[in-house]
Length: 392
Image (cartoon, rainbow, N blue to C red; front, side, top):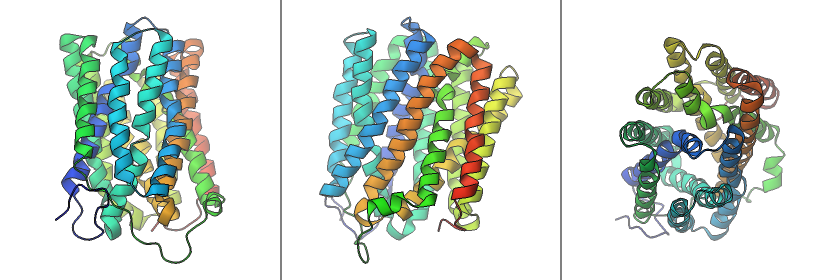
């Protein structure tokens, strides 16, 4: 029998339903918050530059938080204990949004709850992959529950905001954070499988061309999403789309992501990492170009949203797969943490900050065209660094 103790068990079936449930709730909260945080800040009277800066604070904490969590979890081996601490601290920190609306206060609170939220996922990813063991190819099918959760969050909150207005946002997100914390106490930890031979050296892995290339293209890819995650809801509202349509448009992108997660296991066995990466980067450049030029054309916008399957779904799955195979043994959580820190932390912060300034000085269309140049450059980097024939 599997118990919720942090020691966990290396034997028996993985607790699939609880592992999937955590992803479901975690990304439901993300879907409820990310698309509507910037419009909420706009409702409070903040300018595009201030919104970009506040979202950048939200993203910047993702640089340090995963590194701290990864180091602690690999050092102690008690990864689920850290996940539980981080989820409870996220609830406490987020409650601070009810206490003030000044720029400095929101920056402080955003930084705190984002720090603990960002510290949650890297050790949890390591726990999940260790529970799966030799069935690591099942990760995509497990992670798709997170994508489903994002759809639930974005569509449900969109409908609630349409009916009740902005005041409903913060209580709904807090309830979800509390549910995540509660569920974390039911999931058993897993200390991982013993590594064979001498443990790998971190700097040796970091000097590998494919790892350096992966981190470089991850920064470019995530930075290119800055205008999307920060301003797409505002942009669609300005283009005449009602909230009741904006939620499903977000949901369509994540639905395409789910479809991709269902087939990534087969793709990883059939195609090289370089082929999958370059396809993701090229199609992301196309996506931002289409949004820049044809946002008023619903059919084109619908197609652009389906490309989220590549800009996030395939790209993320390939990255997680490579990181899990490169950072082994005692470096598992640190590998996931470095990926989260460099890509979603550094890339996300730079993208959000730059998009705020670009939006004010260049306008929406030119901002998305500039974003399209980033993954296009990433294609070149991937072609010269990801030379291995297969990720598996």
